[in-house]
Image (cartoon, rainbow, N blue to C red; front, side, top):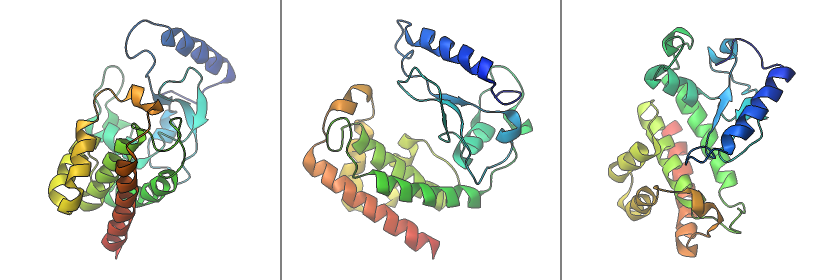
Amino acid sequence: MTHGEVSDEQLAALQAMHQRLFQLDVPWAQHLEGSYVPKERLRRVDPSRSPFVYLDNGATELELDNHCNTAVVRWSLREHGVVLSGPEPKTVIDPVSADQLRSEAREAMVEFAEWAPGPTKAGGMSRWKQPYLVLNLCRMLHTLETGKVASKRAGGEWALGALEPEWSDLIQEALDDRPDPWGRVYQPADPTTAERTLAFVDYALGKASVDRQ
């Protein structure tokens, strides 16, 4: 969180800092991710999802992106944020309603469905993208059911008992595949698993549609 908008001078200093951090010989130095959010824009859900200064996982350059401008981020920070320095999250973020979370989950599921069949660095669907799709859709379905936000693992574990048994093996494989995902960005997913994942995307969209009625 920042006191105000990031100035051009501050942005240049942050760019230089993140390039130095990326060169550190520690495992997470190349996998930092997050946004610099002005406190006034953090307080409440922003329907326009205007961009913040953002560092993507594996990147060295900051960019403007709306990745973190979501109800999910605000809810997670407000309800489960751990303070290392600064104010308590509940003093700077207004409550996020279950309806806001559900509405955002439905929109995100449509975006995921559009993204799912697209090419990756591996050519077709990568071994990273495949379980990422499955577990994110599970956690979105969990949000539609509960009005709360779960981690990918918690969403997947919930889905094992809540969704039709025909998807249990796909979900369990995604849960088992989560450790050490970084090298899998360039590896193609098994074609049969990729095809079933696209079918699961359609299933999840259908379930979300029924839930809305």
